[in-house]
Image 1 (tube, one colour):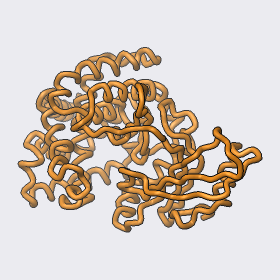
Image 2 (cartoon, rainbow, N blue to C red; image 1 turned 90 degrees about the vertical axis):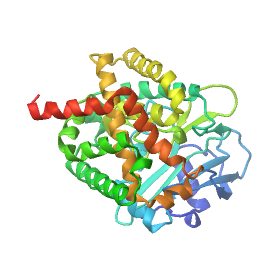
Image 3 (spheres, rainbow, N blue to C red; image 1 turned 45 degrees about the horizontal axis):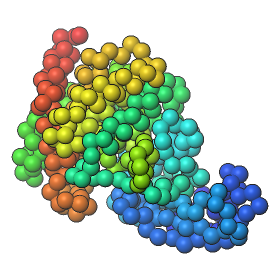
Image 4 (cartoon, rainbow, N blue to C red; image 1 turned 180 degrees about the vertical axis):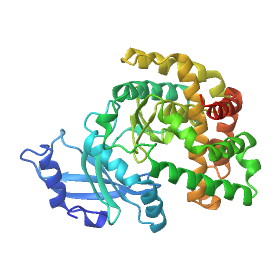
Length: 374
């Protein structure tokens, strides 16, 4: 390895090499830096802000950058290894970060070492930005997120040969891992007495998915595929602090080749309070579809998107369940701002969305069609 894997290993020499290789410095030089924790970030990574000092003042040079490393926790690093989180994010920035088709921070350095599962990212620091939690957020935030999401999906729609560096959700190893984790979560919910908190609709969906995982995965694989963020929730949206504008999208550790409605369902279902979602969901789905068409996606009827949105809710419930396999409930509650609200946001709200859209009925019908050979 020839890159720093923790803050203590960053040097002025390395920073100068990075910036010079990007053609940013000209005759200027970095002569020092100070570090501070990055507020509100770093669940699976160690993240800090570097404030840079130059030999001469130059307003065109970055004043601050974000440094991101693999977590200092061995348990978190093991979870990251299992889900290939660091590989995914580094690959995204190395191969697609310069022009992904969606607003993202500029990347100055990206490196990963597989044997040690260590990495470094040096990113543009988004000063004067804000992120709002679902409890104090506004539905217009989610509308802006959809306005980012649809053109991004359209950019990579049906272009799997161009996405060779992005993990597919549908390879056999991915399916085996997802089934293993979902099965562990199912057992933990049942044995821990968490079923009432998880919700009956979510429980029925998880149970049905586990019984038919292979066929449902093959069905999902048959949907139109694109590059997806993979964890598209409010915490990944950074809006300008002043005025209006589209958000920058951060944290690409779950980027994958998947069907677009998986991202759409995630941000709509977990990004809005239930009453807000009931009022706005149809409009947001219609906006997403219109923007896909506007950006060149053809032969994707609105009715198919509605079906895929139901599949997206099913996938969201399965995806969220895996958190219970990776971390004890006490640990999840410890890091959640509102101690018990994770049961709402991660499980009960998706269950409510599934009930209101009849995703469970749709899932049962789809499973019957497998048996009938459709």
